[in-house]
Image (cartoon, rainbow, N blue to C red; front, side, top):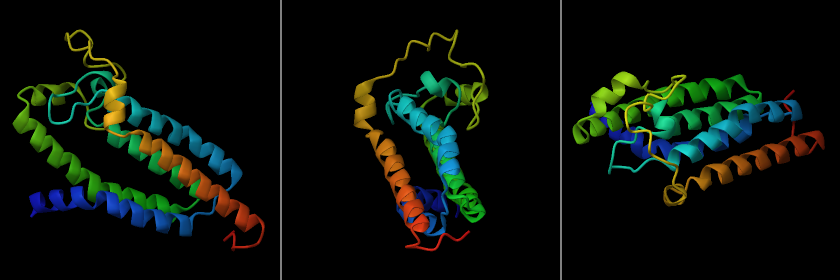
Amino acid sequence: MAGGWKKIAKRIRVPLGFAFAIFFLWMARPSLPFLALSLVLVVPGVALRAYASGYVKKNRELTITGPYGYTRNPLYLGSMMIAFGFALASRSVWIAIALAALFAIIYIPVIQGEEQFLRSTFPGFDAYCSRVPRLFPRFTSASKGTGAEKGAFAVDLYKKHREYNALIGALAIYAALALRLYLSQAGVIPSGR
């Protein structure tokens, strides 16, 4: 059953994200100070996803350089930073609770499923796991001194993975929050506060 949920979680994570966006915009009560504060998480989250996408060669090699020398899942870490940054911007405890639950229900099984694949595909994966944490990063790169530090960011990989969509999505959410703030201040929609 657990293996089945991993496959389901992987398939529904994107559509569930769009459904959550509707809930998010309905529950959000943004303010300028909280929108500004959210940038502390959202900007580095978008940057981390962009940086990581320029290193990863999905299904072709075990990526252990760049941000992958600090955390095995920089893309998911970046997503969490973005999501919780927007939860902060929303000023809604319910959004933060829902996000924490969604990440636990969806991303833990997805990460476990991906690790099973990597373990069965790349013989060095277990050694990599022993040096690099699953999610929250190390302070120094585990790839230094291993001969693997030669990997470099590739713009072609960034474009291939279409990671610019994270930036476009973040800008769209900020635009929607700014519009919601404007409409609530104009009295067109209730502010909820």
